[in-house]
Length: 313
Image (cartoon, rainbow, N blue to C red; front, side, top):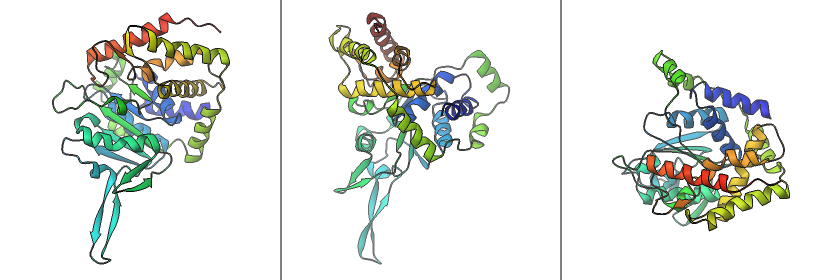
């Protein structure tokens, strides 16, 4: 399984230059059956990463460009009256796919953002009183711009918590930017990408993630970290049980990508920022506010937690 994952990371890395760690975290998120939030300034490659991941997974996907006038029905679907049959027929929206690219999700109103809550948590949507199951697997890959930019709306905490990981790409390094300036076109490379995982392989990888082993000592370490977020005065509030489960699942996925069937403390530490950063809050901060100040505080909180809790195995 590791060679397949290595091929996926390498293929996406040929498009998103110089961002191997972010790509590995994104792949780990998806094989852990989580949803991914990618946030950064415009032009950093957020949409490119999302498109590449959708392509290499070999699954059916839809892209929705979120705007201020987008309505929940534009995502979920709507019933339309057919005069020939004298009945209403449901026309499914783009959410009825396997990979949904929600581009610039914080440019739409909270009402429309919340339309994705049930879909992300339960793999189903309720439209006009009827519950309809979504295809399996179902992944949401969302991109987000800084809240300081015009026409953006903060994601509520309840929605942020549905994303297994949050990634920020940052500026490219010198070598990667030189390649871009020299004529390497990520869009051309993205268009040529082919699926590298069959649906059967993806299902096997997801099953393998759940089978990765953990020791009692490692779970003790994880619980100490979680307890620290709930008791230390630096945090306004800490991780919920859903957050701790997400952290363990992400660590298992990272272990599998490293070729192991067991979790070590380093797995928990590597994924900590991506999993925990958007779920905790410091005094006077706002979790949904994505800007340089918010990211800096998030990094500080997670770093403070990891440094304060000793690894005892």
